[in-house]
Length: 490
Ligand SMILES: [Zn+2]
Image (cartoon, rainbow, N blue to C red; front, side, top):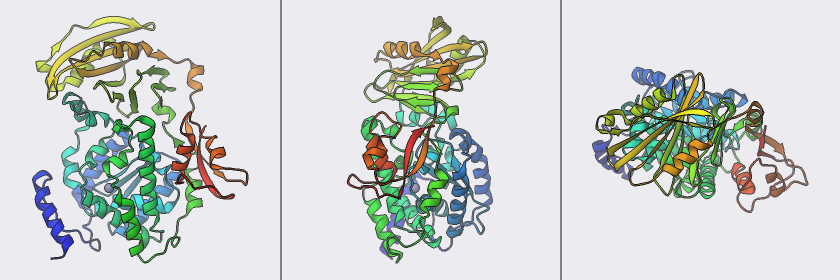
């Protein structure tokens, strides 16, 4: 028995206890055809994923993503002409890519912006198609289907901050079960598919390296403890240190030399020129501790130490030091009292039966009526307090904040300061909020890394961000005539 077959067998035995069942070894020459039931579950999940990830992004990059995705799907043998694989560019700033059964593959514009050429895109999409071809997560995904937001809120009450931070990102929950060996196999398959599509296989290591650099920079900017800020792709497809080196070795095994094969950098950069970077106006902007939504015309600020995460279902904020979690959502009709009660019972779920719930208290903030209701409930991590404050924005809309904290932590100041910061934006204030976009520029003879980095629309880490965005290491310089990406305000 060859060594890797033994390894597969051992893994199967251990895994069969936790993951439902054990799969036969995968032969890349003969991938299992996409079954009718997979196609059906994929078709059911697809609209949910679109809703959770900001919908599909329409722009020049959309056609490129579809074309390259279909190409690798054909190389995988899952599809004869690419038509039965659905490839979507998602309108999300989260750095992520994933696939679900039925051959539905996704990449976010956040991840696309980090890439430098089509070969890197083919590598990432090939990796995801590889997970599908090798049936890596099929059973786990079926089990998680439909858990949606309830699962997220249950996570709040069971004390699983990780799950709570995934609000609006259910796709991630589905892909959390990949093992290191599955990642290696998907990397290998991605390299195999991109090479047979004619791309330079060495770009696979480069995009993995770019993701690693991005994860390291995010950790530096936001603080090491803030796991929610590490690119989702790096969390769900763990970037072990040897993965980049391994990808380079696999590229060598193809027999191609570095520089051989298509990269299509110019076509790629022209397709992503002008693409939104970070939050889109209809999603609202996170800027440090402040969240501002130009379309809904509202803003609020969370206290120092909290990190905002702009999910599709809710804006959430977590704090590394004290385990207090904040959620902001709503926009529904009705009185703030009704909304506060509805939101609280939604968060408590079944735990409501055993919760001590206070009466609704009314008040006001910045001229808007409020309603506050609190509950104390026993959870896996001890006595937990949930406070909901609903605010009547105008005659047709109310929003709410929910605060979850251990009962022995006094979060009254956090509540007071967050709720007190909630404000309406004037039309002028809303109009001044512009999205950031990727601008592709050609380096001229006078340009340097620091001169171009100064044009980046950020207050801090401009040069570091510029280097990571363009795959430049600390000592790399620029050459006149080459194209680079900068992030500018639109
Ligand atoms: Zn993966």
